[in-house]
Length: 84
Image 1 (cartoon, rainbow, N blue to C red):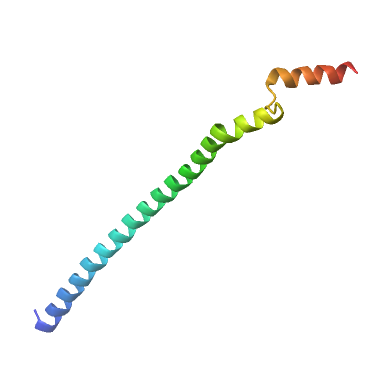
Image 2: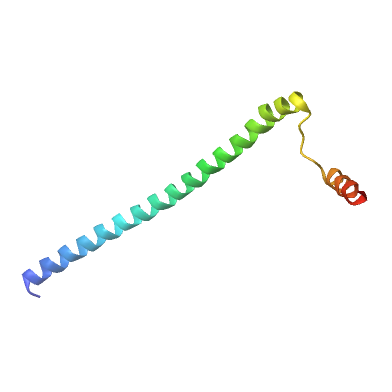
């Protein structure tokens, strides 16, 4: 085998291995990035809900009896409307 050809093949093999290593690192970084992004949004949504349940709902309830209507409340309102 020609020495120049052999050196070129060895260099090509080394570059291919380096490229493969770099691509695997990029793929791994992409997965970690997606996981962190999902966990971040889950934290934001859960903390917002917790803040509402712990602080805002009792405050609004004490201000004026604010509450979400139940299915029975909605049904009763519909019956009163239909009776008119």
